[in-house]
Image (cartoon, rainbow, N blue to C red; front, side, top):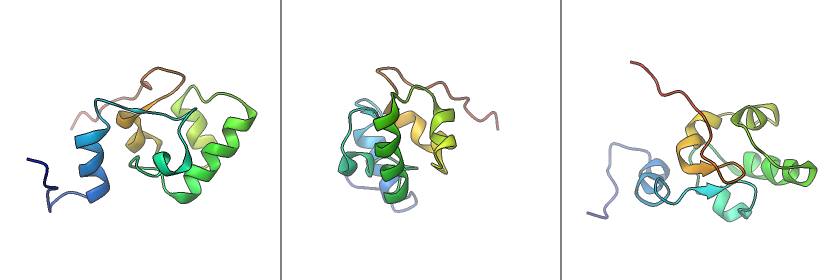
Length: 92
């Protein structure tokens, strides 16, 4: 079923269907692609693009350092330097 659920944020639902098995490489993605990732809005996408000019993003902590407010929300949908980021799932 390709319909989005009504009880879930549409961006999150789309990402669950499309990005979980084909995550976005943050070090290569263009702005439009970054905007499809939950936890990354327009300001965060611009910050990621600017940070990439200074070097490769390899850890979620770097996203927090540049002001991305929800790096853990983005984690299941991204690759950092070709690898899935390490993030701890909630226990409860």
